[in-house]
Amino acid sequence: MSKEELTLQFTDLMAKFTSYLGKYMPDDVTKRLTELRAEQNTDIGKLIYDSMFTDLELAKKQNVPACQDTGVIQYFVQCGTNFPLINELQDCLREATIRATKEAPLRHNAVQIFDEKNTGNNTGVRIPWVDWEIVPNNDECIIYGYMAGGGCSLPGTAKVLMPVEGYEGIVRTIFDVITERGINACPPLLVGIGIGGSVEVAATLSKKALMRPIDSVNPNERGAEFERLIEEGLNKINIGPGGLTGVKSVMGVNVEQAARHPSCLAVGVSVGCWAHRRACIKVNADLTYEMISHKGVEL
Image (cartoon, rainbow, N blue to C red):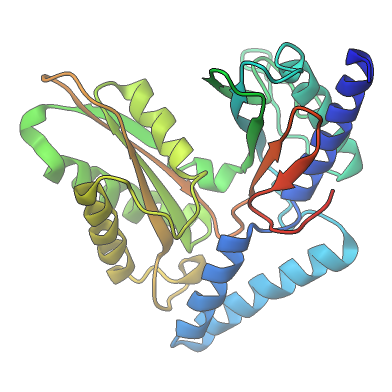
């Protein structure tokens, strides 16, 4: 197969992938929502969860996005240096976004800074956002697609603390964000936390934390305990589904970290709404693929 044919085939695959991720929740999200639905102890809490699952059923039946705000398209790419389309990949993802916008369809959400004009096709300066990780001596490409909606982007924050503030300062920042703005993000939330030494590292890691499955844990024993304690504490707030009472506030808490400078301690917080539009696909060199987030799905 020629490079041109491979490029067309890959673009078609990614257009279908992008359309799909807006309509179907990943397996881990569906599982957690089902568990939280069974725990509700108020009539309105039960009603909100019933509405969520009705929404998901209608999206599937009518083949439309599960939420009208299909967000700003983001791709987190782990690409092998020997993947045959590494040079074409970014252009392919841009074209796939344009196609998915029309075919899904997706709401137009790319507004150009300074011009303040909507492009009408979900592309613009540096959008779709593509975050790259290069994997040496590998010919596979793993791509996480994410739709960052307005509601779940509003609570996002990142700041640099004085080291003396310690982990108590990190915890205070997390709880301030969720209690002040978490309700805007349509709970129950998936909370991504990044900890490092500078603001951009913490912010990026907090968003990458949202790509992890809900039932995953931090590889560091203390990090895993930190995740558990933060989740336990946030759930005691009992914001409830949609912020309308009921038990639990979050689906899970994921923490990603990077070593820091001795004089800086940075924390970033990103959240995903109950309709967490995240999908992961592994594409092989011959363009065969596996949907990691949605087991058994063929696009």
